[in-house]
Image (cartoon, rainbow, N blue to C red; front, top):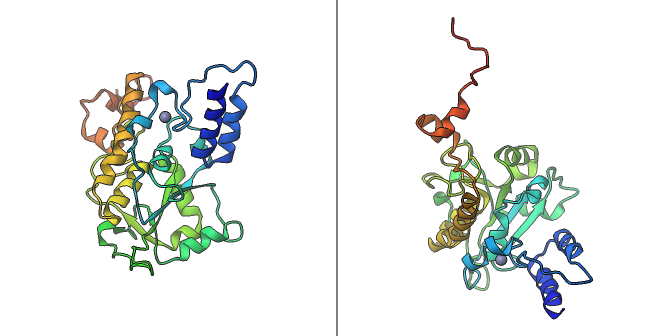
Length: 268
Ligand SMILES: [Zn+2]
């Protein structure tokens, strides 16, 4: 019994999302207490838990990460954001869910977007490379003020529509990565070789802006483990569409070809 109540408390401490907390709480049987095999910290089944891949100490940073999350993303089992919220100090990674953000409904977010220290990670013709960003001036206590880093979380299509549909996200300096390398998040297909998942985006941005290249590796460890667990359970590597087009020898390339029964445009 004591174990069960300890577990409930630790869910509350580690999860700032009330909704999830109550959903999990609702799953706790009252009588008799059955053994639950979901980790209270990372929210994953214990056998494929990620906690042992997290750093012993949360990564100290001056920046703040704001995840703008499409509502459907939370329902996915394979989410990468819990890796960020578990590895960064409390309050340094906030998740804001929604599709439409007006100044009236989200006054604090609108204020944040107008701050000169806020950047939005999104590739495009108006984006500058992250390495071109100047160092933010130190605040009164001598520490760097750090950047407020906005990241769109969802499928590529969802992230794009959130970014484009909301005027407030057009205000901050748009930032992208050149030479970031291929995504390690191989379970989902990325549209281009150079696009990376939410946790990777934040990891690359933090390692540059915090001048600590280790951050990327620390965050890559649980991400890699998550992918490996999925592969062990039969998932296949998803190469980017760009990569597939360049590698017709791969079995996945076939998914790009018309099916045999589809009408052919050839004269035959
Ligand atoms: Zn865990």
